Image 1: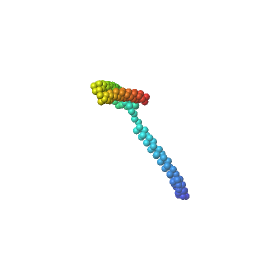
Image 2: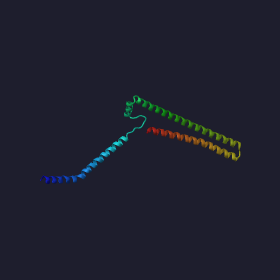
Image 3: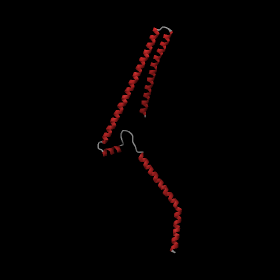
Image 4: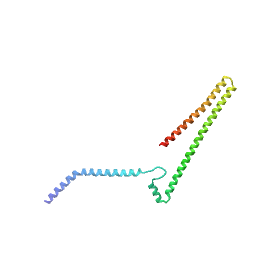
Length: 170
């Protein structure tokens, strides 16, 4: 009797196990997928940790200071020196651009004035039609160079001003 009962118990145990096995395996698969997703999230989170700028975050700065005493002060002074250098370079660039703009305007003025003076001299020395025509063309070229330089200088100054204002707003 005990043998028949044990066989029945085995059948009963094997049947539900066979019936529930796919459900259990689905649960195990779902749990494994969830664990894998969590691992991927952890990996992505650690990879995305970064900073930008001249100074590292305070936690990293403290780590540097713990490893090499005085390194935080050295990092700060390095960032300050870099900022001073960048500002001095920007000032030099602005000064050079201003000088070049002024020289361009002055040379254009002298070129235009020279053309106008040459045109007047040609008209006076050559009283025929060819002298008047060539003098007029030369005079117009001189006046147009002065006007073009003035317009270009005014536009570039306006563009630089509006760019610097928009950069300050950002």
